Amino acid sequence: MIKTLAKSIREFKLPTILTLIFISGEVFIEVLIPTITADLINIVKNGADLDQVMHTGLVLVAMAMVSLCCGGLAGFTCAKASAGFARNLRRDIFVRVQDFSFENIDKFSTASLVTRMTTDVSNVQMAFMMVIRTAIRSPLMFIFSIIAAYRMAGALAMTFVIVVPVLIGGLLIIARHAMPAFRAVFRKYDRMNESIEENVRAMRVVKGFAREDYEKQKFNNASHDICKDFTKAERMVALNNPLMQLCVYFNMVFVLLVGARIIINSGGTVIDVGQIQAMLTYGMQILMSLMMISMIYVMLTMSIESMRRIYEVLREDSSLTNPPQPVEEVKDGSIDFENVSFKYSKKAAKNALEGIDLHIPSGSTVGILGGTGVGKSSLVQLIPRLYDVTEGRVKVGGVDVRDYDMEVLRNAVAVVLQKNELFSGTIKDNLRWGNPEATDEDLTEACRLAQADEFIRSFPDGYDSWIEQGGTNVSGGQKQRLCIARALLKKPKILILDDSTSAVDTKTDALIRAGFRSYIPETTKIIIAQRVASVEDADLILVMDNGRIAAMGDHAQLMAGSEIYREIYEQQTKGGDSHEE
Image (cartoon, rainbow, N blue to C red):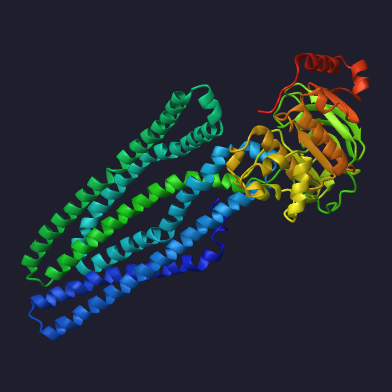
């Protein structure tokens, strides 16, 4: 795990190494300063002349300045290294997620991925900063101070034999009780973020059912749960301070009492006042080092959970990969399903599709009808290889989709999903997702065919009008038509509309289909719809039921031979049709 995360350091290895060097220099000088200070106190006590005092004082000033420079440089390089590491880590996660198949994405919730790229990366960044700075400084300070204290005061340094084990034991007990609460927090962050995301996305539903108070209470419960765990952990960690104070004051009392006794008994020949002052300083350095080591331990323990969650994403390999020598060209839009069965998970008890045999000639129009959950969307998602078949094979242009370069295949297939997505930006920006090189004339033509040009021109800024995130400032029908225009700009060999005209009236729907026939006659068009009127003029209509093709043929053939199709047709022609919002 550490090896995988460390790969994100990359170009920031130099500032990382420089931080370690500067910190080591700072610590070394800080440990020497009390020794020089002790000598200065002793020579002043013994009546040294001013020149000697000035010389020692200047040495101390120079050492303090060098220590300050080392600390400042370490802070600069540490900040650069940790911020760069976090940037690379976020980018690596994002790039990995972009390569995921739908099957991989199904393993992680959106809220969990957001938490991993924000809160978890911040925790790992903080841990990295502490490792290259504090985690080096504190152990070095502890070791150097212990050595310097024993060299200077000998028996007086025995105070650390008492104080250090007490402090270490107390800190370990505190950390042991605080860690479970810290670990639990991150899983609860996912649930809270999921609640926020769900609420924002479904805001219209929440307000439509007047469930604001319920959602507020749900969020408050999640937030209170996190607060409770953090409070419990912080309450334990807060005991660090009184324990530290106890050890500091014990050390001061011990050094002053025992040190004074030694001075009096030896007449200052064993140790002197300067050594006592230095021992107090070394005691503070040693205890503060232990305190910081305990805080590092707490932070690293918290961060290990974040590291593990990030590692889960980084080690996840896409379930869909290119073959060793992929086919780089899609010849035409013909589609073949050969004894295809499919299920979303290996653990699933039932197939979503079963026994699908189908041939669709290039350039034809195919309609797909059926109730909710019968496998219509599952069927078309296999064509651009958003999922791989469980059994059988799917061929496009006479070639198994698994033999294509995935980018080549997906560039040849345009999909307008059932759930349309627009991105924050202008209408032009959104349309050019279909073709970044499209001219303004291309945009206008595609929108005219998708019956979107008229309403776009009614906006004050026309094609430069701003679309809010998710397309919340346009209606459902307008959003669908913009997505269809975006797909048309690809000029694909296969166009799939997954219930993508459900929010437009029948007249507009008919005009859009007429535009398809004139603009992309050689493109294979697959239309999933709930309305028979949307597909009755198709060359081939599939009626799906329970993951199988229950019937297929043109409108007349199905009216004569399919009870399901005839029942749908009669219900819709008697019940009227829906209109755009």
